[in-house]
Each structure stands twice: as C-alpha cells, then as structure tokens.
Image 1 (cartoon, rainbow, N blue to C red):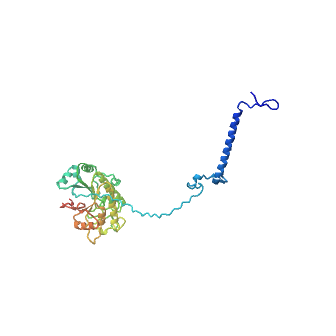
Image 2 (image 1 turned 30 degrees about the vertical axis):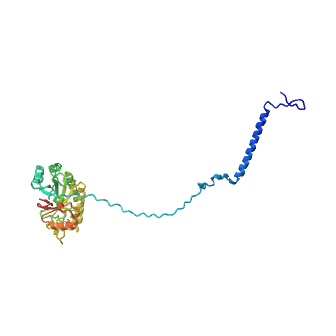
Image 3 (image 1 turned 30 degrees about the horizontal axis):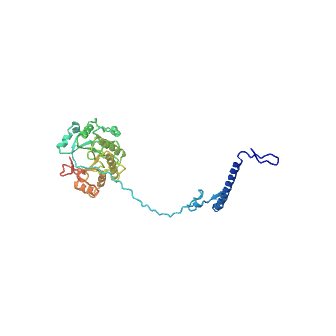
Length: 364
C-alpha cells in the first residue's frame, strides 16, 4: 500500500473506500440543496394561501376555493328564515252513530190459558185449537200472588210465592220444545199485598188505604220499593223463557171512587212522570234480554179527559212495544193518538180483543 508522503516522511492513509464515501456525501448535500430550494419556492407560492391566526396557521387550498362555504362553528347560532304558511283546518263533524235495529214485531193470535193447563200439558193444544200462535198466562194475579217461586226477597217476606215451581218448569219446556210465542201477564200496581204492607200504598184524602171496585188496594208507580220488586219479577219471567211480558194495571187506578184519592208523593199531580220512568226501566231491562214489553190498557182516552192512569198516548208510544186494548178502549181512537205520537207498524203491535181479520194481532 502506498500513499503520498508528508514532510515528516510518513505517507497519509485514506482507507480502502475513501473515494466512494466522498461521492455519497456530495449527493446528499446536493439533494438537501434541491429540497431547500423547492421548499423555499413552495413557501413563496403558498404565501398567498396562508392565514396566520391566534389559533395557528390556516391553509386555504387553492383547489377548495370553488367549493361550498365552510360550515359555521357549532357554537354559532343558525338562523333559518322561512315564510309563514297559514294553514286552516276545517273541523269535521263526527260520524253519527248508527242506531241498532229495533225489535221485529210479527202479528200474533194470543190465546189465554191457565196455570193448570200449563202444568197438565194441555196448554199448547188449547192454543192450536183456538187458531192461535201465542200463549198468554197470568203469572201474577190481582191478589198479588205469583205462579212461581220468585227469588225476589220481598216475595218471600210477603208470602206471595207459589207452593212449587211446576208452572215455571212447564213454561221452560214449552220454550224449548215448541214455536209458541209465550206471553206472561202480570198485575203491576193493583196489589193488595203491597198496599196493606204499606209499600207505596195509594191513600184517600182522609188518610185511609184506598180500595177499588173489587175491594183491592193499589201500590204506587212512584214507590221505589214497588218498582224494584216488579222489575225483579219481570226479569225472572224473561229468564224463564217468555218472549213478552204483558203489564196490566201498569199505572194508577182509573176506575171506581178515584175522586177521593189524595195527591201526594205516591200519587203526584203529573202521574205520567213515575209511570213513564217505570215503563222505561222495565223496557230497557227486557230489551237487554231480547224480550218485548206489552202494556194493557182499558182507559178510554177521550179528548178533554184527564188520563187518570198516567198511561197517555205519548207514554205508550215511547215505551210500549205492544199495546193491548181492552174492549172498552176504542181501537180507532188509540190508533189515531198513537200515530200522532209517532207510533208505527200498527198491525202487529196493536193487539185487539177478539179474533181480528187480516194481518193484525189479536187476543182472547
């Protein structure tokens, strides 16, 4: 190995790769110079796009200048301006409820039978022999006695129950085995048992219990206890299998010495109010059991006469499903009055005494 000698006679040693290292060093120096020049040029070019703020440097890139404006800072309130639109909503009327269909009335030919005929099994044949389609039997008589054993507490207290339930069982059998239309007739306020036990007793102006031409006392349609009792009896008869409950003496007495009757809470001046309330209650309770309400009347509703019973044409038209007329009550008169009160479908609903021709309803 040789080298150049210095002034002391020693030669300098530069290693085995001294020339290559010098080349690399020169390349690095040149590259750094180029990068420095490029950086300076870039900074000179980007100077117009730089913004120096207290939060640092913000770069506004030239290619983003045409894009949408930057979104506001979240903390800034955003004001939205829009035109107010006046919307008017017209109120719509609620749909009118559809009334449930009323009961259907078919003409009937009603034949009255006794409880003995029912118990003996001959009642249906008696109706057929008379050309009837309906059976009528009295289940509460003018003496206040019942033809069955009621569960109403007052019946047991007053001793009005029948000795057995054979009549009720016969009714149930007919209801289950025949197509007969079954009608239970009950005396309502002509009830001497209630009257003598001071249940709504109808009184004279002298303070005594009033008696009709048969010597029977009456109770009052204004008596809550009497009405509750009759309501319970009607519902039991409906459950027994009857298709219609026929109310007799369903108002105040209208025959006999009525001029001596006292005006009181039991017999108010306007007798239609308690009578209508009673019929409305019973009609509603029977309708819930799909049983019809019939009302018997024997009062001649003549123009100018006071309706002593409280059973006016309006009361009957509003609450009675059928009106059963006594022979003393004029058919033409009741037809005109009930029609004026809004009653319809007369042929099956107005039941006249005797056998009627045509398609009307009758009873005997």
